[in-house]
Image 1: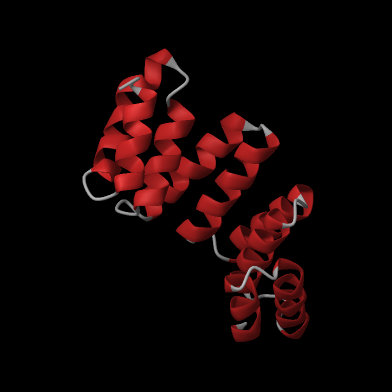
Image 2 (image 1 turned 135 degrees about the horizontal axis):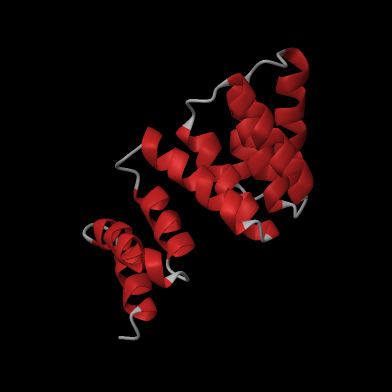
Length: 143
């Protein structure tokens, strides 16, 4: 896991994936390794494999907000917005304070007029402490 994390931080996603695959080979029930492998697959553009790994991680640990958050990101990339929204909602239930989860949830809800108020709440929450979220909110509001 440590080697995989170091490769990932350095941007060597193929090597990181190999290390996480090795970790899973040693312990197939290691939910965190499945999450990390899913993230690396997503970085490599292997979205179907990323989704499968993240789903597997959630089978092993359904209470992982990180697994749900990363699954939402992958589903967003594949265009499955309703499934992405469900995963982001679950991530938010599990980690009510993570700024990235609030940002993602806001982005997923923004396109729908009926959810715009809720989207704004999430984005404003994140914008209180994140300049990235503040800029995103301003661009969405056309400021």
